[in-house]
Image (cartoon, rainbow, N blue to C red; front, side, top):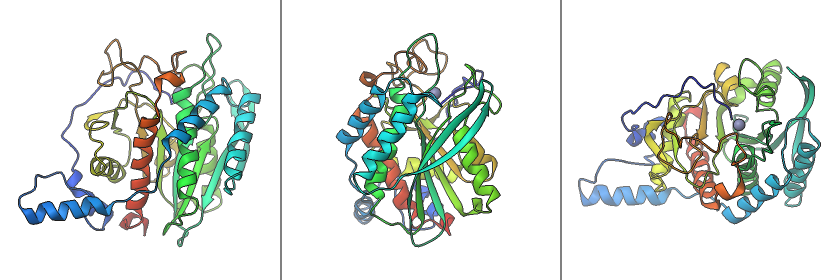
Length: 343
Ligand SMILES: [Zn+2]
């Protein structure tokens, strides 16, 4: 992902209203943050907690995928390495009976036209309404050093592979798409204008031109979620009800240490932008503090120091982080099954 720079400001805010998850979803209570007032309440809470079961997420396999992806080297849009990466993802999933579609297009960029391709796995459900889980699989171009993007590009691509395996044979009440975007990263060094989000914008525009965009009811984005020092903060640009679902599920799964509901991320732009601008509810699940200290803040010397550097390597990522975020996304997908927002 990329950041505009000037928005490096952390805002502390009250803890999200996690107890309101039921209201958000329009379904049964999924989570509760208030202390138990009686044995009955405690029992009800225990039952409520046990009611959330998420499909298995194989963190070891996901991390192996992250390592394999990183081993392709720099995977910039239009590069032979990204073409090989694409073929490899398709082969891995095809071996498990999961069909991957290519969504090819030519992007007009500041450095010329580039052939790109999104990857999409479609899991039909009982309704035509669509939930998209998205992450980019390209890495940012740097000429000054070798950038392999283990976290920024690798983690989202590996995460989607494992989520697709977990959900491919579990039809939901809605249609589920897994979307690997090409060309998320800017071709220029600085993020700005339309020089970013190429694949995401292409698909959003294509669905709009086909009159299909109104089928998309929620867009869940994962980015930079492999950081071994995981600290996912509230993204102020995301749609509030999806953010509350994200942090409510994280709380229910016991991940308050990693999902910091009282701190805001300083995200400046990402693949959800075209969807948000088109009115599609969207959330960015991102750990935009990739460095040695999981509690550093924008402006601190150790804040986000591995991001877009030669330090974005496998040894700064972990299977545990993929598992934590993967299980939160799986929990969100379960929650959406009974959400009034999907009707
Ligand atoms: Zn990036």
